[in-house]
Amino acid sequence: MSKSKEFLIPFVGLKLGKHHFEYQISKKFFEDFDYDEFQSSDIKVSLVLDKKANMLELDFKHKGTVNVPCDLTSEDFDLPVKGKMKLIVRFGDEFNNDNEELLIVPHGEFEIDVAQYIYEMIALSIPLKRVHPGVKDGSLQTEALAKLNELKVKETKEESKQEEDIDPRWDKLKKLLTDK
Image (cartoon, rainbow, N blue to C red; front, side, top):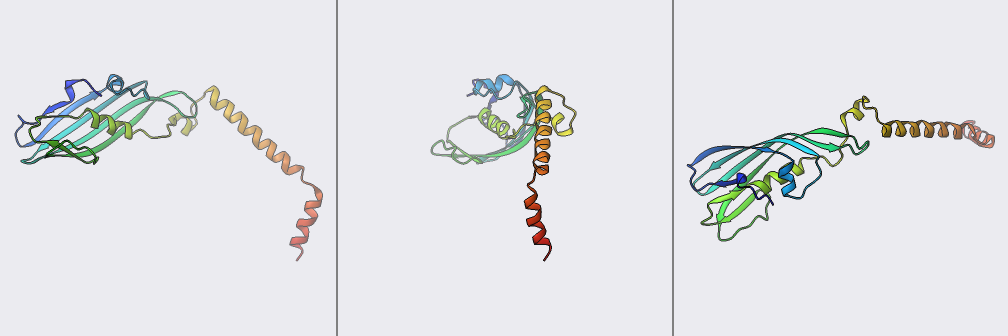
């Protein structure tokens, strides 16, 4: 959990209407959550808090890059990420965050910690399969890719050799089918 006060928003002192907040997310932010999937990150988070008489609406947006290893080649690369999330904060008798789009805070609360929501939004925007863009367009040259291509060529040669070694009796059986 983030220990930084940077992500605490004291909403009691804010006027009704929209308020803008900006955060720059680095690797340290994820270290506070014991999340070590990234070598580094450079993500800008924009938060618009719309304060109304009986509730708060939070609109999160993020865009940036995270440095991750490729799942195929283990080469590090900067993966672009972006996403958005909406959260409604209502006031009730007790704290409840069971719903991912609705947060209920007790009456009398005066601030909200948005770090957990920023963390979840970014972590969920990372694709499960991370492939280096150089693999997709064929421009990446690594030992792992060279070995994979070598094995692929070897496999296709073995398949063609197996096709050549077909028993001639099968050809005669196939001819029976086509002679009808």
